[in-house]
Image (cartoon, rainbow, N blue to C red; front, side, top):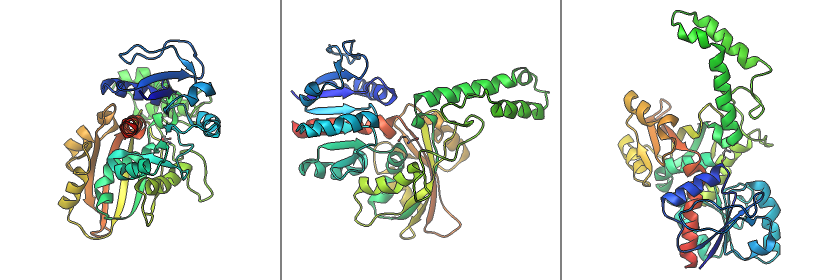
Amino acid sequence: MAKVGFIGWRGMVGSVLMERMRAENDFKGFDAIFASTSQIGQNGPDVGLPVRPLENAYDMEKLLDMDIIVTCQGSDYTKKMYPQLRGNGWIGYWIDAASALRMEDDATIVLDPVNLDVIKQSLETGIKNYIGGNCTVSLMLMAMAGLFKKGLIEWVTSMTYQAASGAGAKNMRELVSQMDVIAKSCDRLLDHPESAIEEIDRNVITRMRHDAFPTAQFGAALAGSLIPWIDSPMPSGQTREEWKGYAETNKILKTKIPIPIDGICVRIGAMRCHSQALTIKLKKNVPLEEIKSYIAGANDWVRVIDDNKADTLKYLTPAAVTGTLDVPVGRIRKLNMGPEYLTCFTVGDQLLWGAAEPVRRILKIVLDHIG
Ligand code: HSE
């Protein structure tokens, strides 16, 4: 039976992965070994089966014994342990939610509803590293797979509305703390509908600009505001998050001629759903109904939302999508610029299709492959 080591299963992405694997009854047909960087010897997670106490995630001998390692521990762990493992001759499969190895030549970025052909080809050619993609890229691809598959896309610009979860669990907490401080700044006034909105507004902004406003994680107010910068600067003038759009999309799709993709990535006060407004230049004028049918037919999770206010409010918001695998695409229409210019809006749970789900699914694919 294949030995599968799980590392970083307690963190945010790891917990969602465990939850999804339990829900899908995935813990069968292999020997699951849970390791920890800090709680060695303690009890493993409840996976519906007896599990052994936690192994040490830095124990090279133990790691070398695994057929597959699944890690949600983060890039620092990957950078530290992965080269040592391979250096010691380990030939197992490395499945990783972190970005450290994504762009390596011997790594495939996994999003099987979109690139199963690339994954299968990689398995056949002996690639051993399978890495989850950037959440924004994966969610955009889940939404637009139908148009990419049909070869209709000349270029894409994506303006993102990214949730706090993309920055980490502490950031989600900080967002809620900021909301709490803002709400308290005008407590009494909100109870009185006749109170002046100017006073409420003044109280809110005064509190948001105060030194005591909790900004240790984001470095700025997110609640009641937004932050048009995600990740580190690149020489191109993009942020790294913006740079990933082009680099990862073209790697995931293994395009022969890279498709230009660029835009501005913005952090907003949603908890865990990323949204994106896309502008797409089509290679030719395709009727809107045809476009919608390609989008809707691409996979089991993408859903075209009718372009009206009621459906948009009901189905096309982070509040509606959080905790689900749905990838709604709405506001689909041609732009004034001409019949080849398409716009749409899409939302997806950053922790599910953006992180844990592709990892969960590649584990099954690899297990099937090694039989
Ligand atoms: N980098 C993304 C973000 C999440 O900050 O929202 C991880 O893919």
